[in-house]
Length: 129
Length: 500
Image 1: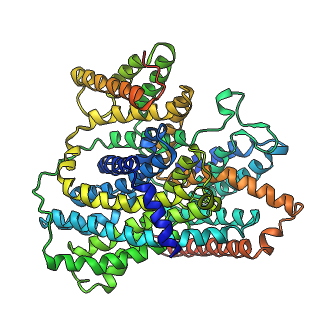
Image 2: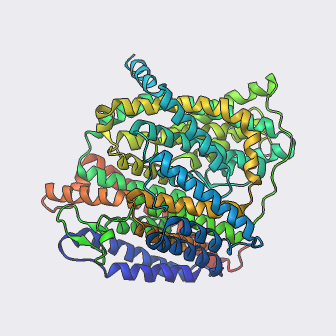
Image 3: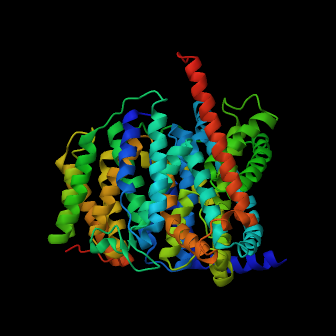
């Protein structure tokens, strides 16, 4: 277990620990104090365990998130077809495969078709147009 | 004879043309998605859950359980042919992949299929007898007992899934915290909503499931950037009679172990497999061959896998408490359909309960008839490049979260949980206890408050009632044991500063 992990978890718990209210907050307070306690134990225990380096790859996760957020925003303001196209083109920057516009166009077309199929056959309310 | 009568009643419901179709679709689609690398039963169910919204209740639950055991089988197929382990099929990699290396892929797949069938059949007998009986017992449970049971479940699940009690409990408790977001049931006060209207109803289970399992898994796969080599070998399915005879005892052993372990809290397919494999290794007639591609090594664990997958429905349907993350998700599906699983379900919706039990057996037959012979075609799923696959999966995640409430805000929540799930994965924390905590949190709170109300604020009710007292004693024992283990480990490490 990495020390970074342990302190990250700990700090997350501190935030949650300060967060409750009176009245209906009784139960959250109990739970959060347990989380706080566990966080403390973890921090204490981390002193006994050897640290381990952590590897993050920020590029992929941020690209995927950008794609998802874009999809939601575009679908909200324009329509879902553009959203799908944005999702496909943006998210495929992630990963190691070489970028290809033709392939992305094909995927988008396929997904739009699936979207229409869902709308018509399964009765989902999709704002496609 | 009542059981036979009830089962007949169940088959009446399971064998309608519609439900048969849902069952078949569930098995096939579940197997296909389960085959894909990185997508275990949990992510498969959460991805496909939206497909079932527009289907009638019984049909959709039949389809979901079909997806579940289909995905389970798909997992073992990818484990046997390509050594891609998921949490639920680690053991299948050992002997199954060895058999592939020995050129006996077909035999391994057939063995897995047939043993799954045997395991499933045994488990359904257990399910049909034990669940109603347990349901009777569940009526004796008071609020305090429910609290104790849920806490016991947390401890077991945390220990089993993450191997570290502390991390698992932390995850479960964070899940409970997330569950308190939204409107408080008793007082109507909004908690932790930050004045955002879409948080007033709380966070959707699907958002968490898709974020933590769907999106996080995809990004993890993107990071590893692995390219799979599709399996091209020839498959000869039918075994000789001598080989067939070797499957049976091992599969029966596995089914009994699996059925038993599936009922225990925190149990389920993963432990059942390991236990069955260990027992086969000890008691099988061919124990020397196990580990080098023996039929028994595949048969026992596959049977235990399927058996446990089915008997883990027992606590959910009889008591109303899911015992692992997959069951938590199933419970979410029940609730979406407006059915509260628990002792009242068997009495109140007999057609649903018995129909589901019967459909599990029907699904079993589908697995053997459809999946085993067709598996060689389905392996071509691996020929789809990941670059095509992952934008599509992302799209399905979006559709899934969106169509619960027809609300695009939910996609933001899912994305946030995607980040969270990714961070958890990188920190090597398992989000499974979090799911369980999230589902059980509100129930825990309600029962806790009710218990406190009944006892006029005295905590002694948790110790004085026989059921909750025993459970709390078990929890205390377990935690003490863990602390002792940790203490001795650190002491040994201190004494020996250079561990080998």
